[in-house]
Length: 57
Length: 44
Image (cartoon, rainbow over all chains, first blue to last red; front, side, top):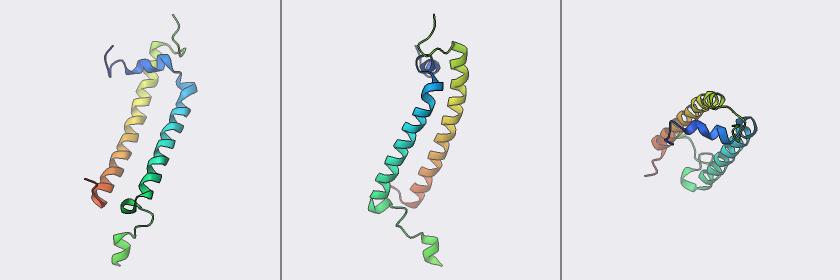
């Protein structure tokens, strides 16, 4: 058993027809949590921060 | 002997090729996003 050559074998255990969408949902949930954490931080709140370019004009 | 997932070796290899392609594209987008943030405000 050697990786990454044997990585494909995960699909011998979990069927992508059943688990690919749940994998996407897990990735999406992770992305949403990370973005909420980033927006929650004052330094990196990219929604509140005024864009420098817009501020310069 | 049938595998747990029901896929054959060939089917698993075939799907994994597509999975790697899509995952590589996802990593590319994430890398670009991180580079933009580093250019905006380095976090280290």
